Length: 277
Length: 297
Image (cartoon, rainbow over all chains, first blue to last red):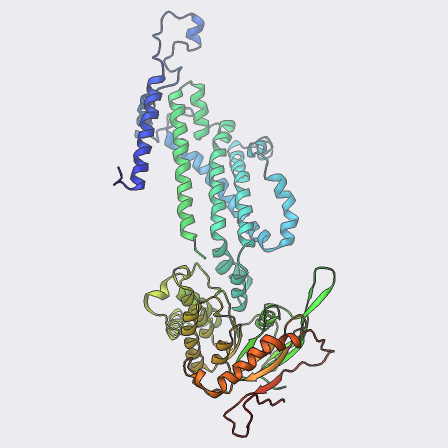
């Protein structure tokens, strides 16, 4: 064992933990009782359905295999492939997120550059920031009159804060020396912003963007459960209504995998703008 | 003095003291720097050297007084006045070369990209940086190499006045020596006017044509201007052999050790505080006393 590198040992331990976890899960679930004589009430409420129990991992894997081998099928409003559902969610997240970035980054720049703007806007930010994004949903539905756009609005409102605050923080924290370099080189305001302040603040800004995308992905699931129709959140809720716990567990895992993927993308972006100094 | 290339006239800087009052770091400081001259300013911490430097760079505004360059009062930072900061102030996300081209492109906006690069590479070579090193980021360079890049950036811009703010303060003694030599080499080639802050007496004697001595603050002033009567080209090992070296050095040590304190804190009463010129030259044969030969102007 001593010959293995730290990473290899960690990977081995991960696999071991996974195997033990799956093993306990698989064998701690009592076997389904054979459906005997059912009362009419039991038949009507699905009491005889084999699906009405926590499924073992083997069933979840079978489900995953089935779903992932044909992720983009579309058999009507309540039966779409997992790929389509995730696609809808990602589309909503990215749209809301894009508009949030469009506002948060320039506004954050302004707040970071001007202490007057900071002091003037800070009370609003402090009040609006702790509001659960879902609390906006009724108001959004009423004003926008469109559930799709409302979901996007909720993503917008939840992703704006970390980006705004981090941008302001990053811009305000740019070392004075670097600003002085720009000043002694007679750079105009716009060139200073793009060639000195933006690269200097980029690591902090991208950290804010990474936090935002994480929050947006958390919120989209809840938002889609409320607005319904399409998306991974709706899918989870729909499968719960179908009492298809295998699909519920599978989609929970998918939410995790996609969230990890989004985070990893921003991790790459973060590495590309990082500097030492 | 009225026709100096760079003329500092009755410069005063007042800061609030935190108790509702105020104190003057320096008052009515006045001196001149000639074109092509290398002037060092020596003084204890708190005498306002860095403030003077920032005012010359245009980064700070004086409370009162003017700085004239070529006869016109300066206002704000300008590419005509290049600055080498103590902490190098390189942009850490750019390579050494890009840090220099950044400045050159700002200075000569109508140059082609190739010309900017060529010019920058040439100046990096002059300070002893070539090959692979110029494509590294500052974090991958040693302190000495970073300051070389910073010096190359300033010289490549060919400013009318070059301001050096304790450029070697953060370097070890051996590195400092080599970079001083390189600075002298680059400077000789350009005939650049240089104004430099330093804490190091030997460094000042090696580099400067003239050393300005400041009294302690508050109410600091530039009390003396000491001519360095050692012929160029100078060399760090050879100058200590020169008869004037220790005479000048002793004068400077004596000033900083004792007189800077005795002369401190005198209000100027609105007078121009021109420094007294001190000329120490033991190679003058009309002088028969071994001590200092003062010639006040």
